[in-house]
Image (cartoon, rainbow, N blue to C red; front, side):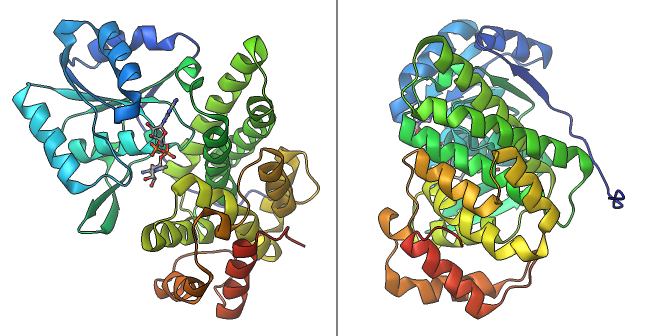
Length: 358
Ligand code: NAD
């Protein structure tokens, strides 16, 4: 196969990875000339944020803001910006998943404060310049280099507390970034390599994490999964996504379905839809999964992890499938296979019922 023409842009971002790497967080701030951080987290992750604050030391902490919430409500973003101003913060340290890192990005966008990310899920937001803010029930998303975290500290120990069910769906969410990256309209060979390695790492690690492993085996798998999440997040931040991500955005935003679960359920069906138009990507996904077929491989992986495989299991109503189809067709975007109403509606029905792709 000859190499297709491509454009590759690299991003200026530091990544520090490894068990115990959190100890080096203060040095990351120093290296960037930052002095006082507002530490961001959700209420349930307050204890982890306090540990981070203790590691930074009182002089370097402007405060802890523990109200991060799903989809970054604008009111919360405003409160966080005000807290940053009042306490003289010159940066935000986001400790958590995509919601908390998203709050950091909202502060970066409006107040210009740089973000240091300490990810605790596999969603991958820390590696992207993509932000989302929800105002009056509408989620506005955009892309701005100012929101890209300057430094990312990946410490697998922080992910030890991520429950197995969330590890499974969050890991499938990461695999979805890599899978769509492999057939992206603006893909490139570097991202293809990262995507394949990311899928391999997660497909290896998730069964161990969800299979009740403990001790060193679990620690190693947590490391592998976070490594995979980094790779997959980088792909998400570098190349355009297609049908799968658009569908998940529609289902999550318009029908209020949980983010990582929707990704888990829809991915096999989006891949089955695109398979005839992207054979090389499908081969690569299947090989990275150790499966003979990409769509069946992700479906079987989700099943084996005990993750949801049907939209009806996660709160979707059958009578809303037509509307979901309409919304998904409204704004055109690049996708390997053209969007055809009947086929897309069939995809949604399959996902609703949780059928194994044929
Ligand atoms: P999340 O950040 O909403 O976290 C879900 C819950 O898990 C929260 O209560 C959180 O506190 C808890 N949690 C996180 N890590 C934990 C840990 N290690 N131990 C115990 N509990 C933990 O979930 P998410 O899936 O990471 O992020 C989803 C959001 O991120 C969505 O809004 C999505 O749109 C956004 N996102 C954005 C991008 C981007 O590039 N902008 C990429 C991926 C996801």
